[in-house]
Image 1 (cartoon, rainbow, N blue to C red):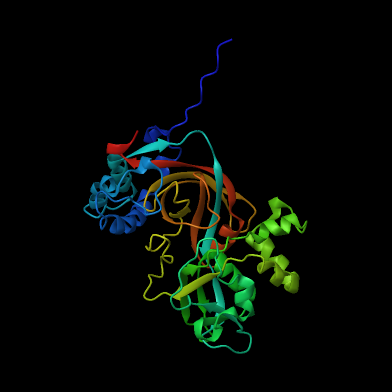
Image 2 (image 1 turned 30 degrees about the horizontal axis):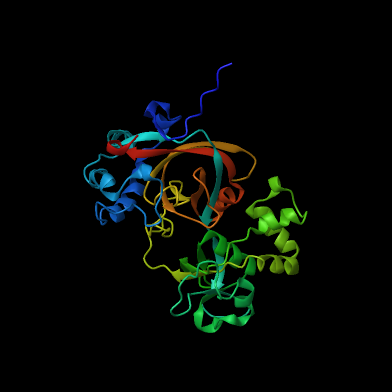
Length: 354
């Protein structure tokens, strides 16, 4: 009996006709997001890596992407057809070795708060301490529990004060948010820095403790459990030693999200958080998966071109992504329940595609 051939172990070029749903996607939305990444890529030396964090050599150097970026910022006509033609002219789909992965979602939550402490507004959102730099592995920097117990000068570092400690915790999970003040003014917050302590999933802890089953875990079920068990919920949140510091955003386009790790504003439904050791920031990924409906009662097929513009502590692996769904209630309902199998296929400049 002859030996079975080894499976393909390296990325392989395929055609756009092999991308399920390619002809139905509105690539103009992806092109707008890609242009924001191009503004950064065009400032790099041609010999520089696309991302200081590395990434798969498949993606090449900044100079391999700059001709396409110059064309993207030039005279591409309006509409999905012209955008589709642009991507087909400059790029080639490249399929990774057969595998599928996990895709989740995040959003920009809205919560109630005040610029001054008082009444129900008792939970601070902190700016980084003066001279702070992230310490790999946590070092000797205080943990979440120690910060909450007074290890830092909260009154000096507080940007504002939130109504709910649960809102504050999920703000840390999402990395950005909108705070509605008592006068109805909106203040937007964005990630500024984080401590070096490892992130701990409280959903995983709830499963380990038998409070819920793995398939039941979502932002909505975790929040409901913490609201029902406030003391236990506070203790649970403190198990996550990682702590996030924020900054106030100024003059941000209301139709866009906050800046991601690439320092460009995120585009709802088109921006992805990825593992930067695999996918450099600014790269293009064709994603096929499903996402839940707003009411959580159904699933919607999702096949669209995305741009890698963010990252996250829990995003590990080549076929692992976190989709930015937008700001407010409905995107939050979708993102909170999003947990689906799916697949990435890269779009790589023609000149360097395998």
